[in-house]
Image (cartoon, rainbow, N blue to C red; front, side):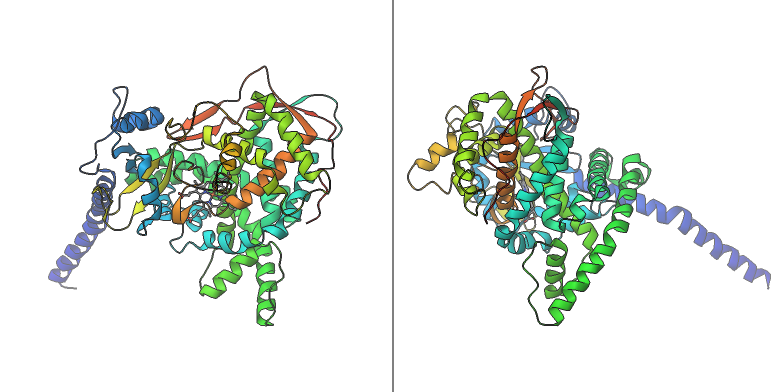
Length: 517
Ligand code: HEM
């Protein structure tokens, strides 16, 4: 090798080294910083809300509700600065219009909030696919199978309640509210999605609960971390590591079942037979994916679906029980209605529709204790001009404020009135619009418009069956007169994990486990 060749080789190696060690990482960091800045920069033309002299971001994290209230004082669109970037908040009068706009996306708004590109968050990614794979299965397969699902709901509720709360105890005992209700809901939902064997498999129930807790904790921390550092933070975080391990364990547990069910469906479909009419979420996913010729991560999708179904239902059921404890005068009226409806023949397909007071009570409970103060979370896919001229920039995230406490919408909005929606249903033609499952700008617990919650019919059925059980078979009481605390995070509100309720077995007046569907 000549000396000039050696020099050239040295130069090239050095250049490669500089490019590899300095330029590429620097460019990556710069790119991250620029995209991080771009995604967190406030939008032009929308005032930024804050309160208590805090910076906008601290104001959002430390006083989310007050920040929203401060912003709404001018009754015009404004923005808040969250950990995942600015968000435009629209007063409630925009709800109808925003719900109907075609170029806004719920899934894309959630993709940003739920770190879908990071390892360990795959179930959130499947839930929020752009092609609406899971919501479509709920809308088509699940909702059309409600008739065949109800007997399973009744049976699993009976078994799970008896196992967890006991059947013959004479003493009042205390339960950790969220833990018990979450177990019941997970088990009942898993019965419908996965059948009677897996839904009683303790490893499945434990792992799904643990994964969702770890993933939610990790997500909260990641939202507060700088955009560019999230991949690294996720790698180091104990909750992130645990969530990834939980996920690996769930894959090991569920994958053989997925293969078995896919095989069964394949055989049915290839033989030209219609798959049997039964609740089987994996089978439904297989059928839908086959029609669309798509690849699906069945395990991640199943967990994503369980989480979507479990979270709101657990909070709603916990809240309903607390509301019963605080308002014992409503309890006897609720029991009377349940006995009248299911007493003669047990559960039947239209029992749910006949429980008008329970329906109104549950709706009032969700109105007055919303799980989130903001609704209709959407990403703007194309610059959009609203009817009053407000321009929503492309890629902006928008949300709409609820009107649950607006005195022009609800009489005495701060008073819990179990009969509120029964009365409303008695007026004119509003029997349907006053039901728990009805969505409108005045009641946003299930969102509104094209992407409103497709699981709400299933929720209504499930809540009525479980509440009937829990109210006829048990008396409920506050522990030391303390109303269980709810914790606010940004504008989300959830029950404290340590909150407790007293429970005492009572003699039910009718056999609440009987059904004739
Ligand atoms: C009390 C319980 C529940 C509450 C409060 C609740 C609430 C919500 C809300 C607020 C949304 C967003 C809607 C929007 O922005 O317009 C949503 C979406 C969704 N919910 Fe529920 N939900 C509950 C239970 C369930 C259940 C049991 C299921 C499944 C069986 C489910 C499946 C979904 C799905 C798939 C979406 C996404 C819809 C889409 O992207 O088009 N939810 N839910």
